Image 1 (cartoon, one colour):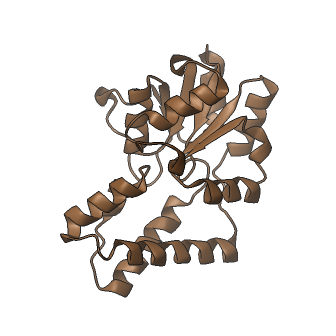
Image 2 (image 1 turned 180 degrees about the vertical axis):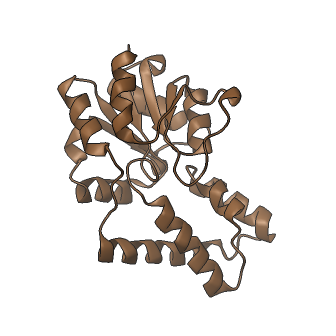
Length: 216
């Protein structure tokens, strides 16, 4: 029986990975560097240190990283300020179901706390989360399992009784490293092959998670 649900945020709750992708492309054009899709994909679901490492591997130096990241961040902020925060299908329905069934939810995102809490407030879903752990609060980022272990502890639930909801490869690896069950809801990146053992169930949107939890 599932006793807690751990939510990723970008690309899972909110359709922000697409905005981030365009932001990285914008930054590349401004700086005269080619931000390959594979490089941007490697950033998904992981932390600042890992992004810097991937950037250095791609360009031989991380000197431009801060400038590129700033351009990407400004692009995303301006897009959301103008258009609003895009919420993924089924998010509110799933959160309402968990509340009704007294199954606690925790946020476990690689995004820093200030930005993450701002997004939750923007979407009016803060009240649904009993706990939250953000990327600037754990020693090792995804794909390490630290953030999901910390989120489970914050709920007071063993990791093996927790269900992780993820869209990224790094996030799914982190879920398995933490000993959690995982549902993948693919976003920009396709789901890993089932044979890789990184997810238990694949669905197309968050609303479908409700039936999975009922069956579990």
